[in-house]
Length: 280
Image (cartoon, rainbow, N blue to C red; front, side, top):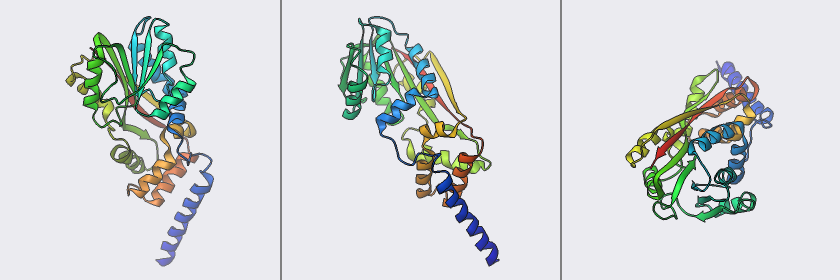
């Protein structure tokens, strides 16, 4: 019996060691800077897909005033500015000054119609009924009070205006693995411990209605990943798995089994983001 236990322990140690060495080139071990992460997400196939849907849903035209709430490093500001041309205005708001500095340095020089303002989405630095269109992209999943943020959007939009929101539903994160319980444990850790408002995608239509918006359209955008490296640049599998171990959602052995399979076997993952259109 002791020999069996020793052999099992040895196999687990070997697997953990193999994961640490062989998988190091597959997974990012260092968290990227927030601005870098948001910029590369915008440039990814999945990012371009849902952002394109959001841009279409905004129905922009020359002369409009557009708010990008939680604009981050400004990845979406040029497309908005080009859509409203020189006669329009794009206002990027963020509470992180480093993000605004990055936006100013990299995104707005060629677009004089873009304004950047420091502000909180719970108290937008705009007058009542001062914008024609508003968007927010993967921001409400992090905020303290999504309902209050929606009330602010309702306040600043002009009658006939439009709000377009894009938010994931993290319960929809599905990663193929021969041991589904490991995938479920990983997703449960993300939804319970990592993302503040993990189910915001499914809640948006209700919250917008409660804030006084008619909601004519909800567009599901399911992002499918077949390349583990591309998916890891979005999900940070190794870093998140290590935190799941520390939080007790996975054992060290389970984490090694989970990551080793993701790194070396055919990969599949998907998650659904919802684009919600609301009208003022």
